[in-house]
Length: 231
Image (cartoon, rainbow, N blue to C red; front, side, top):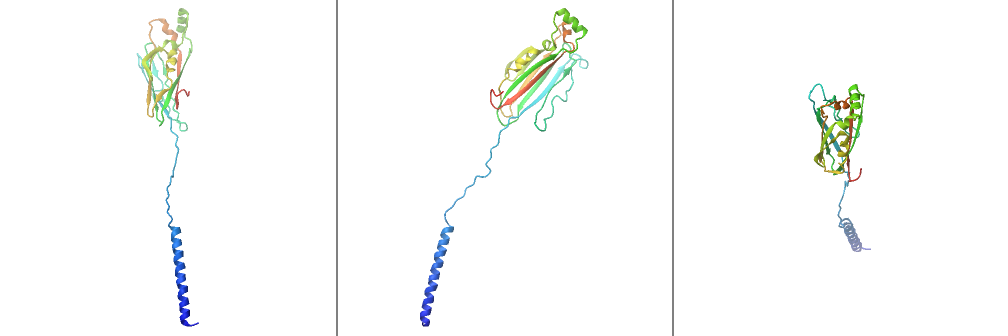
């Protein structure tokens, strides 16, 4: 074969290789540049809301003889600090040495510091202990034919919550006044305040001796719940 034939054959082979190379290049470009789009939705979360009821309690007393008669025994520790585990706060006031004409006020302030609306219900219970019967008390009990405990002799006036008009009753009856407080709406940051004004009246007779040594206790439980009629 002559050189001219060899050269012509080589040129045809090279042209074929160039064509194959172009085809491969075009195919490669077509695969790489298909249309595409990407959207993402990261970090989807579900977070529960909160219902969190806090309480503060304050008390004042107006004894006729400030240093000798009725007194608040724990004025600086009426409410505990929140429990580190449950967050629960417990409040109570102890008033001692009460005598006829003494009067005072107890205020309970409830607040919903959660981010959900709730419904507040109050459960009240009043109990009494006659303590030690003194000689003047026994003499009065014989004279009057009865010996009522302190809760029947202390008068109270309750206001706040949904109570539109102050409710006056003996201490023994105050639980029925509190028990009307059912499913009171509380928005987040909402506040409900109850005020109890109490007095041990002076009857001007030996009837007052029937209260000597007696102790009455008011137990209040405040429920904040998600829906009405839950409690």
